[in-house]
Length: 156
Image (cartoon, rainbow, N blue to C red; front, side, top):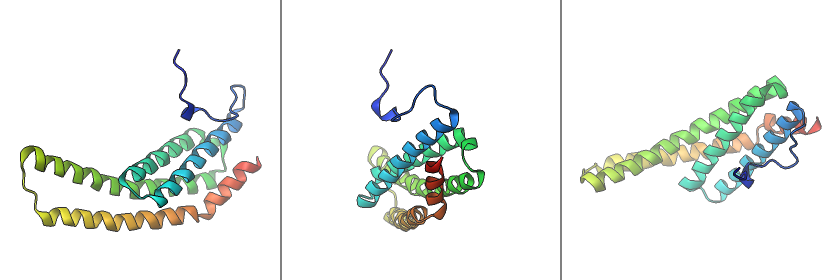
């Protein structure tokens, strides 16, 4: 049997734990991972760290979907909606990154001439969306529901 990757292990998680206790530990881990990646992204806002951030949000959202019954529904919906919004904004930037990369490959492989103005407009759109990502991240980090979710989760 293959050994489980260390990054998948959740500290202090036991097989005999209740569903709710396990949920809290797993969500706490994924939330900490997300907050860590947000910090990394804010220090180095590259395409790669933005992609890592999007993946981390998606992982937390999927975990929340599994364990939604373990949390206060109102807090859950607020946090989930905020994550969904953040993921959507980041997805728009990621889509432009992928599009620009594919256009570059098309130019190189098929010697297609893509108007410079078109590429410039895409890059400008990306820059504007990056500002929106920064604003949305700040809103998320200052989101009262996030703080309430963390506090209520840790009290139980």
